[in-house]
Amino acid sequence: MPEAHAAIPVWNAENWHFEDFEIGDKIRSIRRTIAEGESMAFNSLVMDHHPYVSDERFAVEEGVFGRRLVAGAFVFSLGLGLAATNCLNSFSYGYDRLRFIKPVFIGDTIYTIRENLSKVVHNTTMGKLKVSYSVYKGEGELVLYAEHLLTALYRNPADFADEAKAKMAEKEAARG
Image (cartoon, rainbow, N blue to C red; front, side, top):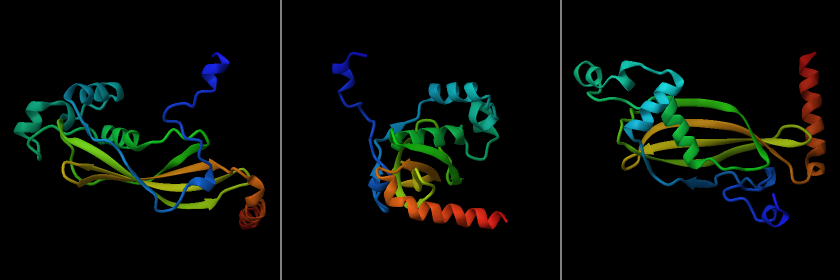
């Protein structure tokens, strides 16, 4: 890449560090309507061919909801993707409390609200954050909730060195 191009900031790529995450901060995504083609493409890609998500006749004639569902894994992926940030200094650590609260159907429009819930010192180079993703459809009906655990590099690791070392010593002592 030419140096002049490399100097241009990357679109949608934040340079946040652990210190920049404020507890309680929220962002809301744009809305997105889920189309049948993409739902079926996802089902095929992940081999989810449950009749509720892939068999229109079953869903209408025998299903509990009277119509086809969008696979929960797809709603999860879309919901997180809508509000995910491309933070160059953070790394996924896992997910907790994933709940599929209400059904999502082909043609539903969803959006996501992401909230910073907590942050703690993790080790000498990065802290651990917890953010929630609440995915809504229509006029604010909650359909999915998940908590994302992630780590983020410290801007100034020295500011956290003592606390990180104490935490690591505490973990070591607990191991026996």
